[in-house]
Image (tube, rainbow, N blue to C red; front, side, top):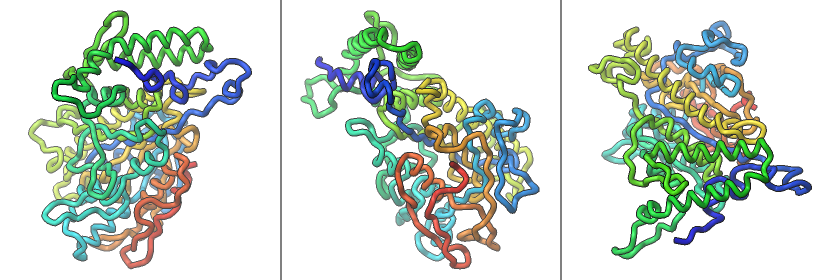
Length: 479
């Protein structure tokens, strides 16, 4: 089997433009004097059901009518909110946003009430709008679903490197997809870490074959050992030419690949490391997808990824097994709920804290990979978001957590509160003032990736009195 050496080395992170090793270029070269900047990357980390506001908020209760912020870097762990406490070790690289509004989703509820479409379920509309910010496809006889290309796919199309993967979507669906390549057309998604690894490292052609020909997996299985031996030889060949910093980076990168393969059931074969494409996985899915994302980003195989986090079991967060997460816990977790229970609110907070622990672990894997003067996380923006703000279906007062900062684009180490400045687009009762639309954050994320746009999805919507709410422009106070 003949390998495309350049393509293989690029995927393993030692080709030009992938793993950044400035000393490889030698003295006197332009690259040595002006090493290429690490690329910017973007990852979404999506969990379901919203949160418990009193347990995540860190706002100043005496300043709710005005914008304000808190310096996270100066806070002790005990001063972090109950839900966000697992994020304390990352506080210098965090940007916690308080009081955003999924305005387009709320506006669609008003459209449904007025007869435009039929599905007003807040979960469905939240899932449809979370990354699209546009009217959902209201399907006769079925539920609403995303009505436009999602933000991850829009950004990926603009920043993709020719010949590499534009984006990847990992994990599960929370009822419906969040990622769309077009209206009502979900992006491909992979829920199995082993299959996702084969996808990233599958370097052989996958075109049609004759019935008697080996399958792509057969070829991968047969070739894996010799391919990795080749990589080991290339690592050894270039290692003496590297500075101490770059040699350490390369060794850590090589160890990351080895750890992934060993976790997928491989073992030493002929001095190399083998990976069995058909292995059945066990263990922590979140950690493995974090490692895969780190591998994909550090090798520059892709620059955009989404991880839709699997549902937790009651045992994962300490709730009794007889309780239904959705109906019993989430729906009774805020004081405005008809069946509010402090006990259910407590379980919901435990549920959120467990996801916060997983988010911290995901980010720490990225933060463990050195890159340039910092880490892979420093050159990545990871956005933790939910399709609702609470288990009782609010879509205003949203929490959003950004980790990383995309090479210093975002000013991290802060908790940023946004005052309620807009009349909400729709309400079943008396309309309230709400915070800025999340659409502005979408614009900021595009601009952080070098895309000079001032809108994404809908450009404006009406408020409850018919006045226009503009959705153009970035979210202020992030940079």
